[in-house]
Amino acid sequence: FIKIFRENHSEVMSKDKRSLRKLRREVGVAMRALGSTHPARVGIVALLGGVGFPETLARARFEEIDND
Image (cartoon, rainbow, N blue to C red; front, side):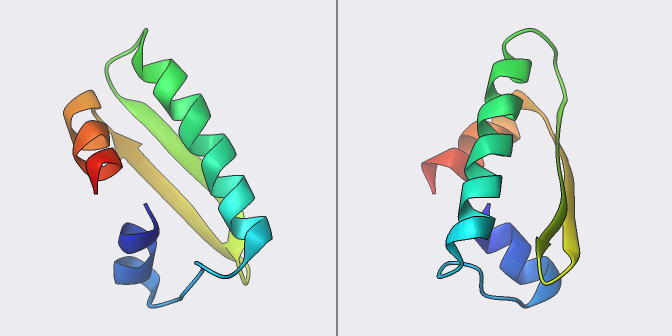
């Protein structure tokens, strides 16, 4: 997910602990949601420097990203 954010916004968040904590929490919510519904939404308002991170994922895409 960090790579996707970097590609879309050219921001480096790997050293920002608060942003990483927000991302981990939302990814956990999305993972649980994918257990019961097909597409899940990861949406974080103001993830890094006021930039949001909206992403809708299917289970296969989630697993592909998670393996990276």
